[in-house]
Image: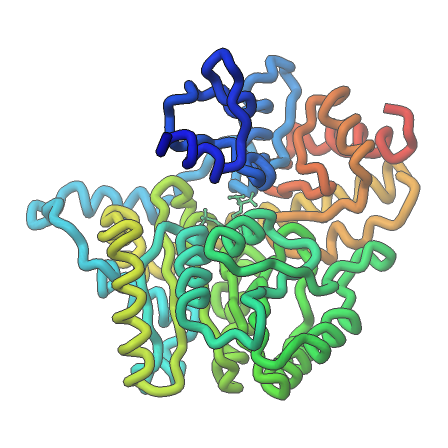
Length: 438
Ligand code: PLA
């Protein structure tokens, strides 16, 4: 009886054969996976990677997931990470005890300085609550969960996301009961920023709304506001009493310079915009699988930041209890040692520069060699890991099905997947897809 009531509540149908008709679990199970939203926000980016891996075509190309590859299409273990790993491996004093719930203190404090700068007034005044998280995704989740519990929403619990955004933002906020809604961001006509639309929605949103902002290297469009536009955005956000939810997954990848890529976040902090920052070391340290990131919540006083930190640790306790230590130790060592830090900066430049070179080469081939119809300036104007090509879903499909070139349905390509060996193949097939001859 109890079991069938649970099933009814979950709203799914059971077949006489004893299986749930939707998720095919035996009917005696009380938890089924066929809820109304199951699969809707699935892990399509990783499905794409799996399809690429299963493809046996010799010249296949993976431009799906935003993971850096070197010019030989190999994952790149940063030389500075190799060095830090060797130091850790030989450190007899290290043990495998639990970290504190809020993470390795030397890591979280250095991570906060990295994004906010050592001169940050909020840091000097002790107004930043920093917690180690499961990479950027975990930071987004913990930040969203924190707001869902403690933010004084003006009416409905809702978050404004750029249209488009990293697809996982939708699921992350929905999971904690915050409804995602879009603000205009990308303008397909100009293949650039719809700044007027963006400002308009900041003005028209209820006061004290939460706006998610990509700190740099916007995913998926590669289109960022200019410094002057950030200033105007801060003006309106302050006027309206909005809250800035910064997602910073690509510090260093936009320009090759960690400080320059942090400038929007730092500017907002200086202006006193209420905000939090989600930080990831997956991309800039090449530590994708290490799951190392941080959440920084800026309070208006030290007492407030202390209370925030205490609430974050309560939330973290029931979710993951203690964050993992290995990535935290690696990043902490690099951030706290001036020599290793300088070496890391060089590694970041190497990655960013290779991506910039690929942009120049792709632009040159499309424009000068193939004379592909349309304007391709955006390839060089966009920044960061991704380029939003502007091609439609049908053209994307043709590239996947006919040329074995894998990319997301919205036409986003990971520039890091291009290299000297495959760039001509990609450009030629993109050219054909645009001309409708593929
Ligand atoms: N925020 C943004 C804007 C991202 O693009 C990503 C990763 C993350 C957060 C989370 O990264 P992390 O948890 O690994 O630190 N986006 C990837 C991968 C690279 C993904 O979809 O998870 C992407 O291909 O879009």
